[in-house]
Image (cartoon, rainbow, N blue to C red; front, top):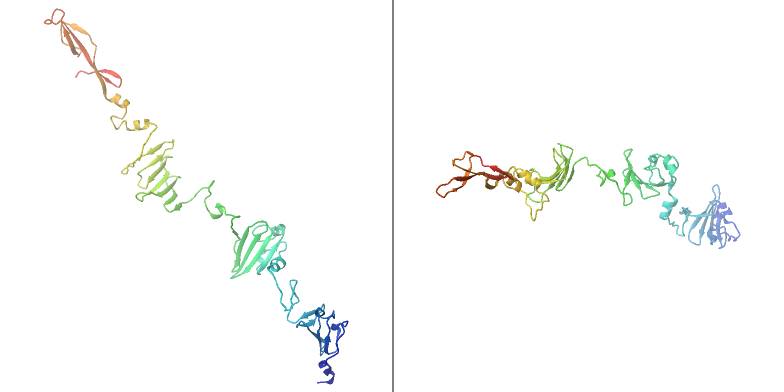
Length: 371
């Protein structure tokens, strides 16, 4: 080793506290007292001025146990970064970064007229102007908000609108973006149209409605809908529907029996069916009018009302007054002799009384015809 370089291994005198230790150029080992403002943290330590190549290399070993190298603005500890997002490393070299650093300082602004299809790098982005969202492309809606991008088998984007809880999601896979899907929650409930359901009011069902024990479908004979349901007894499938030729509404089982018809004129028709299953009523049945009942069955039964009876059956019988005559007792008027008497004794009748027989039918007296 050349003699000129032995000095690099020699201990030099301590540097005064007023000495700028970063300006030392002569190789050697220099003690540094505490209070030197040019030392890292003004701490005491040892300055090493190493053999030069193009310039002198300085190292400072501080009393804190760290080794520092000079920078243009100060000193930097070996193996440590100076700051992370404004956070300075502690004496052990650790830097604490919080979620606020990511969501606040590290979120990336989306510029005006940007196309969200171009954003595929995972991270957190934001759009702070509605006008810039409106001028852009492929936004779920023209409102500012937050864009979250996740890495997976493809790429997933989540967009959260700034002024509400509305959230949208889509994915990029195989080079194609899916449509934006709206995320429903308690504040953003889907409408009947969104889910393809029938609205509670002001809507029309165009296809069958099927549920356990219930089936609603349209008849082929007309435009009415029929509601089929499982009857409690017998397991037969019943239905409520419009008649095929009228606007009546029928409640029936599948065989066509046990009909309860709500007539178009407001009446109710209850019948037992064409072949079986009579209608049974438990308790009192209290009709408010018998007119329809009387007219329907008057032609089939002989006795159901006073009017029918008066028109069909004899209600009374009598001998009508005809008069009295003498002489010949033969009756050419086909009357019935009802009395005979004599003016000159019982053994010599001179006068007889005769009357026509009549019967009362439907309120009128009718002569009995002679046969």
